Length: 187
Image (cartoon, rainbow, N blue to C red; front, side):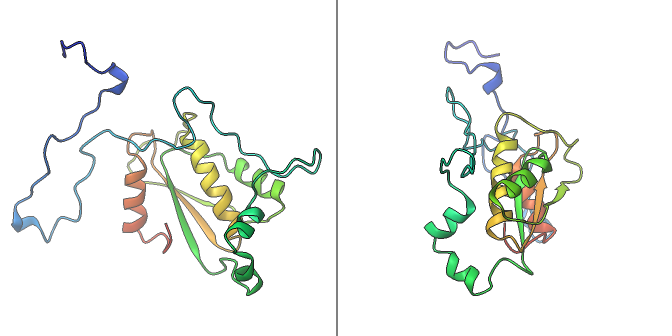
């Protein structure tokens, strides 16, 4: 155990290799990847120390207050001409990756609130990554936002949500799984 006054608190202790991993060249053609050598996880961007998590809102028909919606993004990023030409994501698929289960009701409530009928995401738990668990530390909210906006901006696309269980494996393993399984051409 560390005796220095600069030791990290137990919640900040992690394990990881101390040097780059080396494999014998004879194994080079047989090994695709080496993973799970650390316990680091991606940190959601919507939660910052000492700051309340972001609370997504929409244009309110009741109060008249305006909030950023998928339609606003279509204007800001000049997507409307693509929509007018018939490009809505139809016959396309998108993989969104995460490290927490999500509540699909959140996604459908968002779609209803913004008046865009997107498809329900297909949920894929990475096999062997643990039990499906919702993490309220920002991981679930981050995935909600990604799913809400991808399913409404590309409303014709099939969105897949590939995630890891128990929060132990992390989004990196979800990305690797989505690539290995060729879940979608867009991640």
